[in-house]
Length: 236
Image 1 (spheres, rainbow, N blue to C red):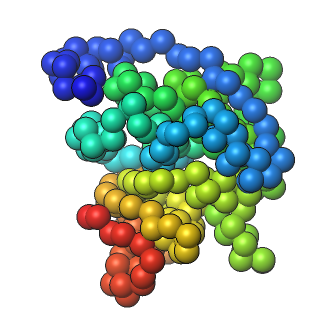
Image 2: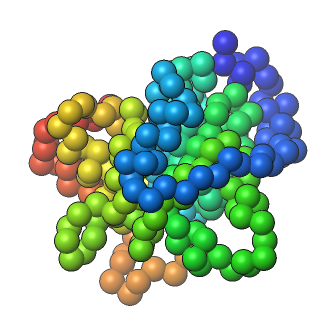
């Protein structure tokens, strides 16, 4: 039985607020394939539910995102599923404490840029990933998405897409957009996919040519849906 069904909402909120951070098990992967294989070693027989969305840009209605996730997870028993995000606590990563208190093992796949661009290099690396059980840091010259020159998916995003059994997006920027497109283009399996059009934090300054806060992933999803491009399942 799923934990949140047993708890009054006020108690669940209290548990989330007073969660104790984890000491993540962190490994480095030289390639996307190494990262994918590590998931099989860590979680044999488990399926991977991947969340993508805004990171540093945050959300205008993150409470709405959390409420949506509580309902969604009723269909994904923690005995069968783990939840993968991007490791860090920003934006969509703010779901980690909630997911831990719902009984899920949590993972993160993130570019080595998280180490290269650390604001405080003296801070223990493990503290960069609170509430995450397992983290894979992938050797990558960027943060993810398609390489603009080669049009190949970056190692970090290849790893993200490579472990997915089901995918959910809550708004999102260019990296999430590219991972969604890549996941939907998989030929060896159909990846169930749900999209929820949450907006980025309106206080974040947008480029002068952007007139809304929907994000690149929202735009790409709508375009794919309008064109009915095949090979994937649109559940919502």
